[in-house]
Image (tube, rainbow, N blue to C red; front, top):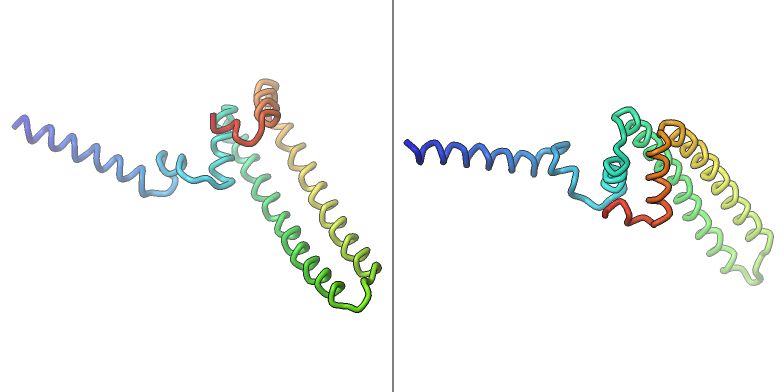
Length: 146
């Protein structure tokens, strides 16, 4: 009888471990991973963000990530433009200037998006959380891991 009880408890514990390991959204699943979402999750835990603050952070991070897609596409176009300029007999400075203007426009849009996102995030945090976040930013990207 005693062995049956211990076996049942062990089976329940095993199911709990497997559930945390394999189902997305479970506690164990969130800690694994090394991408931007895992970093953001650790950062939010570190500053003790409320669920409403977490939603603002996630929305802004996703919006900024989508905005960087334009940067990636712009860089691909810049590589093509640069390759075309290098194939010509003489280097066309007007083509280079046009390429740099496109890059500047993309970066200006990205700066505006980042400024707006940081403004929204700053508005949602209290003084203690802003101080913690500033400390983490000052120490560098790996500070959220500690």
